[in-house]
Length: 122
Image 1 (spheres, helix red, strand yellow):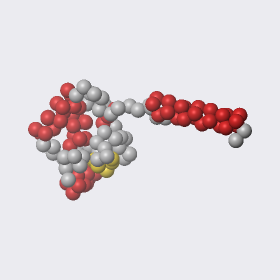
Image 2 (tube, rainbow, N blue to C red):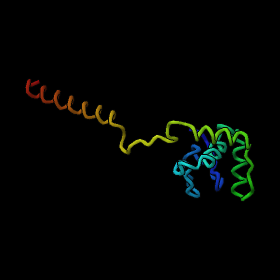
Image 3 (tube, one colour):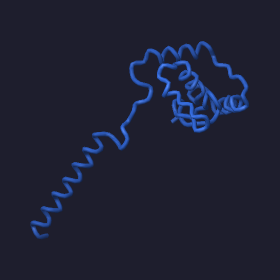
Image 4 (cartoon, rainbow, N blue to C red):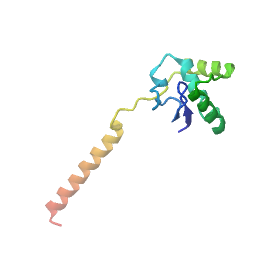
């Protein structure tokens, strides 16, 4: 996971597309707002070293304007606009089908072994 700063309030968070615990901004919920998502990516440790990231967060918390590299912002926005896969895969709550299939198979095997053990009289 990467460290990031909320583009609205400057709060620190884990991941550029993670909802902010301070102001509630969720860049991933705004599927068509690619520039917001690009700014969120730029304000992460993927593009800024720790000290610069913290400085940007302080500026945002104070309400000071933050400038973004226009060329890099345009490049990331275009990459987000043309990507084929969703930004954040939505994993169903409770785990995947494969996980629950494996758990079910293990339970069936355990019950079968227990019954076999009891019938044999061990």
